[in-house]
Image 1: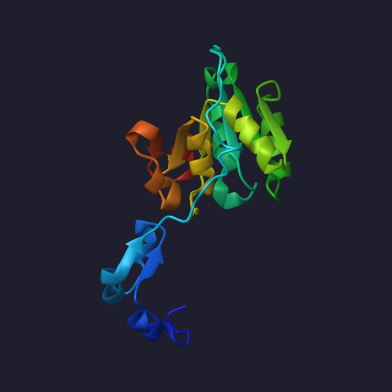
Image 2: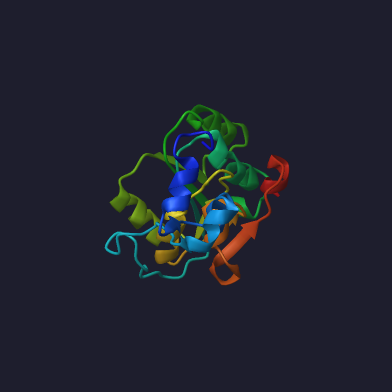
Length: 191
């Protein structure tokens, strides 16, 4: 992209530059940073994503919502359930569709997780909002997520959040809003 026509002149002539996150700002030329404004572009529909009226339950629901593609790593959450008899006493709901679905179905079957792990398929935004209000933990191990829209939605629904410390999700989640897992090897993320 740095070889594109007008790359340098765009930054030189601009009065201001809006950038969503620190990792985006760090990628800008040093000469442009003084006129850069950190302006996250994520937002939510407050009618769909809002605090729930929760009743207490001993069983916790963990939710993953996203495309079922390799870099979003839905496999990590399933493998975490497979490795933990404690997690298997709770529920995992995965919302989304994508090329990883057959492999995830196989992983669930191999580890006999059908009683606690469900692949729910693609849902509307309203349905995702309802699922977020019913769940307590949002697990989002994506390792290539520049924005953080889904993380903002889950926070609006009062969920605790577990993300990989990278990109938008890593920038949005602070200690009081959830937990960041250091980026690392797949097996490390599972544990």
